[in-house]
Image 1 (cartoon, rainbow, N blue to C red):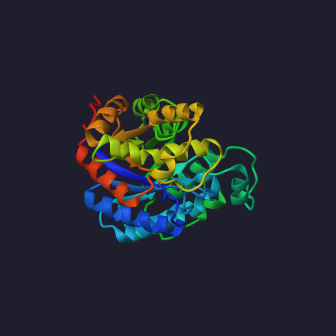
Image 2 (image 1 turned 60 degrees about the vertical axis):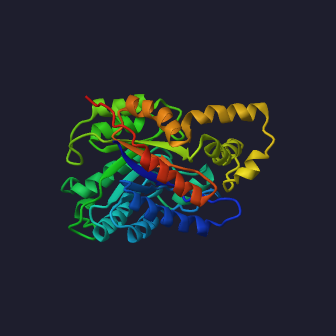
Image 3 (image 1 turned 90 degrees about the horizontal axis):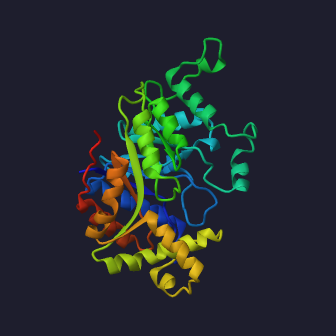
Length: 338
């Protein structure tokens, strides 16, 4: 069977609060730890009323403290928003406290709108260009102490010393991070849940182009998908109506809390909005365990994924936990990678 993991965004829901969303994330982490999931990753988004946390490093420490064996990481830290040295310090600290349980997933986008991105970076050096690759290189050189002898950064000792940087993963929704992570010998995570690029193209490009490195000897590709699972197809469809309305509102630039199924089912969708939902359902796997297996297994086989990471944007926390219960029992078959 293919290993299963979790991506949780601490979604805020209508009738609740962001503080409760954060507590729900901790509860879900404990729940999926007991279920045997491999990883639990949290994301970095800013100025989104639907997402409670913009600080994955803080959440990682809290999650690791209430779990026992599950790996905890970032899905991901948006590197353009942070100095590489600060990222290294914080994740080495986490690794020191929770050895062999931390992952460092890195994203290339700012995770927010242009104004908020400017507010996040305005006290940094203004470069006016995409400097992700430069920041990534600096992070890796800091870890390996590979700056030239005359470079001032060579004298920097990252504390806590003697602690390795956690495994690095590059995250993406196109082929850019696939090619880059393959060339650098890093792990790769593909965001099928919002990507428009073909998942198989990115993941097979990564696998075929992977070059072993000091970071990783073999490729490892994570396929992140959105799943809403319930005991019956009808109940799953009812729960998924929240995600449908949430998607329509996001396409209008409205990023409010996730609505309830009752609100979503009463919404007067226009024909164009129903078509938007239909197209988005190609990236959302909804149904009973058997239905989800039938829909998703072909994609797992096609992408030759090493791992399946599940995200579930649902209004009811108990239903979300139940969805992960059911997903854990599906038993997706690991693809043939030869």
